[in-house]
Length: 217
Image (cartoon, rainbow, N blue to C red; front, side, top):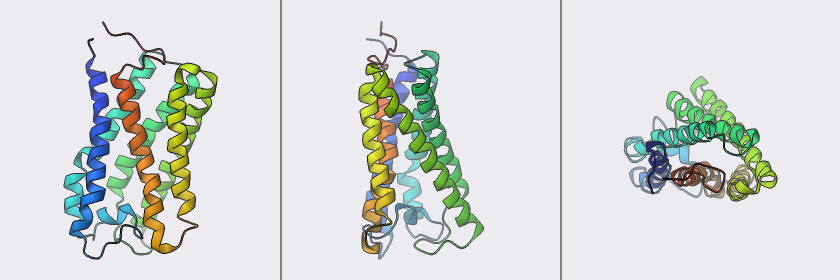
């Protein structure tokens, strides 16, 4: 079974997930007083955060890995004309979300961790978050709907549904639970996208066979 380079690059999605997980788990060690159950993940990478340097090191594969994986998935499904236009649009939007996330958060990181949003930079950070969430939701809905229409992508639709449920649970939960549990439910949202990206990377590695991808020679 021979795989093309673009398929091997799908594994960068798994590397991105591992890198992000390591950053989330170990960065608090350099942030005295950080409460992961109450504070957002983005507090760890804020400009003033004492954990920023460690975060940047541990998450170094996260940003680039996510973009490479999502972009390669988009190119692959486009060239192979996999499934329907709706499916491919969902993939394109998900890839766009990863670009917006990587570039946007890089340009506009939070200035102060755990503080109120007051500066223009912090406002832009929130604007990026809104775009990321919007692109994520629309892309996942496209993939879910296509899963009902095309049984070849039914399993991908299920994964998209799981990711959307986790994302919504995090988004809605942060406004419902007490402040001391904000960080706990927020992590459902932040891991949903990077986790789904890793899933797409695995499908890319396998050539999207069930979805109509090319067989390996």
